[in-house]
Image (cartoon, rainbow, N blue to C red; front, top):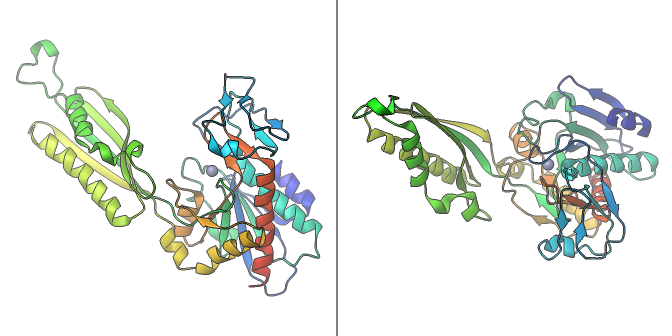
Length: 370
Ligand SMILES: [Zn+2]
């Protein structure tokens, strides 16, 4: 559907590959201007149902409670200050029992709107825009299978943030840890002196991790160790955790603490075995973006021209841009006007979506002057 829309708008080099990546080009009209990219992800979060979405438009929102028709879902401005601030906007919500999917269909709509506007206004000076729509962002794989060579632009912007003026040039650095404990299983009736219960060892490890180093007790630039899942029997227990920090040294220290804790507790029982496997998920994109300051500067300039005071906010998570920036395509993240992502309370402001599309149009102008 999107491919057809891009063709109708008049984009060129439209290509959908077998991995589900859709790329297309809007040629520029200023000779020698560089190419830049606009990206949005097509997939939505698995945290709430995403099928059969029936969006509702609430025109000229009155600032009060919004009761959605299904699922007993209520958007309460008393508990959602961002919502309270949008009285007078036209809001879009789901019907209450699904995601809206504004993360990141708002971004998709804004990228398409921006190139459609530019294509319809050839009098506006513009750089060549390469657009890209990606799958699998929510499971952290979109960036890994993105064909950089086929995309071809030297820098890009993902439209995947929230509040107007937000410009994200920093994400967590991320590790995944898997701790496997082998115990000795014996029938409990004959277990005296023989049973080594891996479940009890796993519980002791989890309990020994510092409570102040958890997602529920940290904020802003603080990192954490988050135990996501434990699967345990007497014979074998597997603890799956994620480790996050903005700083690489602090990240390594959290990972070392996790390893030390697991090994020390299991070492008290010589018949048990423990294995700690730590793998990289993504890296803070700041370091990679700092090498290309003109990319973030262009976004700040585009926002200023649209009347926004750009704010650099670190993301306590990852985005396609963290993987793409590490792979050599510097890609900061811009706002979309969507809010309460990954829940049935997800909503978006039509006016802020238009503002995001307008920033993308300005980016084409800023790059045309480069
Ligand atoms: Zn997203």
